[in-house]
Length: 260
Image 1 (cartoon, helix red, strand yellow):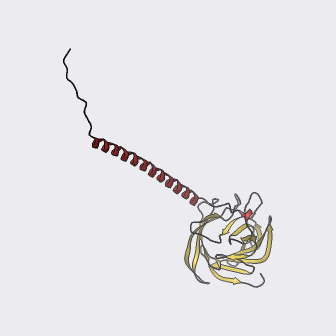
Image 2 (cartoon, rainbow, N blue to C red):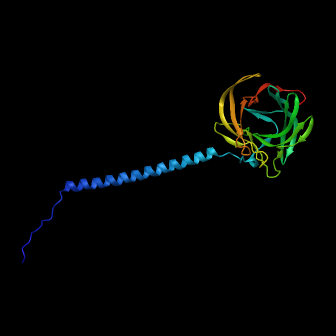
Image 3 (cartoon, rainbow, N blue to C red):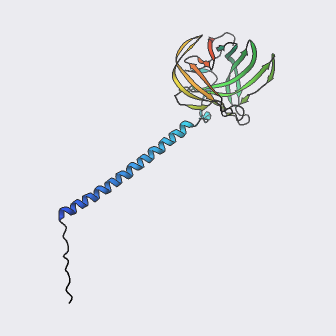
């Protein structure tokens, strides 16, 4: 028999086995925690992305079929009471907005007619009859369309921007929420290729000084339209009054007027 070298099997102490098992358990636990943390982080990222998508979208579905609407009323920043009038002016430009004692049926909804008259250097340039209704439960004010007359040298020259809910796919939209929040983004008009105004609430704590007075707690909005992507307007609404600033136009008078 060829003589060789004999190897004796090494023995492992019991405490070493315990340490090895504990280390393995720790590794498994750390791996499980890591997976759990990664899943939580992934969910957080998804929620953040969804929130960003929602914030970037403009609301256009207002559930009007479930609303109880009235043709008069008011919320904090919009007065829809017959006889109430706003006058805004700057240099030779003047806009008079009057809630008329007149209603108009638009589809199945009875709306309140609000007349807006625009003048430049004392000459009438445009008259629009706007149709609004207010939700009895929320105070949201909705816009159902407008009839527009443009004037030139005292005569009607055209009707640009006219639209009504139910005609050519046009839908009513939100002109002023009853409970506005900073960051709200919503369509005010939904008449494809004719009127697609939309608004974003920027602030609810503005102070505005006008010839008609100084107002606090005002709502400031930024308005735009995809029809003219480069055009942006800023407006300010005073509590209990409504529109008090439209770009360079400032409120000079407000309140009820007789015979309207």
